[in-house]
Amino acid sequence: MKNKKIIFLFMSAIFCGLLLQTMHARSQIATDRHGSFNPAVIAGVWNWVSGQELHIKADGTSTTWLNGRQINSGKWECTDRKTQHFVFRLAEGGFVDNVALSQDFNSLNGTNNQGYAIHGTRKVPYSPAFQPAVIAGQWNWVSGQELHIEADGTSTTWLNGEQINSGRWECTDRNKRHYIFRLEEGEFVDQVDLSPDFNTLTGTNNLGYNLRGTRK
Image (cartoon, rainbow, N blue to C red; front, side):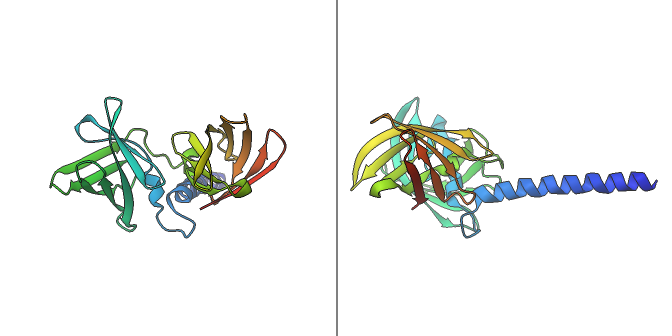
């Protein structure tokens, strides 16, 4: 009987540990550096109204697509982090969408400025596991450059307001948060690691130069 009790307590401890790890992993992505709700978690591709797709980027912009063609663009902002409320302002038609992000981060519900109900679902459900797209955003980069990383696996490099390169990225090791960037111009290949707080990139390129970037 005593052995059974010890085994039960041991298994309970393992379960609690796994639960805490899962909760911590989710909180890392869904919260910002100050520990509050991170609006960028809304980034992704969404099934939208009238058969449309809504592509939301972590940089505060969005595009609307229908049958493979872009039909609108806009900007978004989180107006209330506690209620996870967002406002989308579209360039065409003067539409303003007021929506709330569900607690599981997989649904958007609200109305637009014409009184129509709005509902959207994330095409790939949000997971509490590490999401490589958390790297998306604008970064202070080497030699005074800016690195703009998109959640769709693309990037652009800027210097003094002018785009000087573009490329693609992939996460090759989620456990280590390791990424490879392949640039079009110069055939540079950057290998970098994302810090645990998601705010620093460090690594080297294929020429042996050290790389370091900080999130803007």
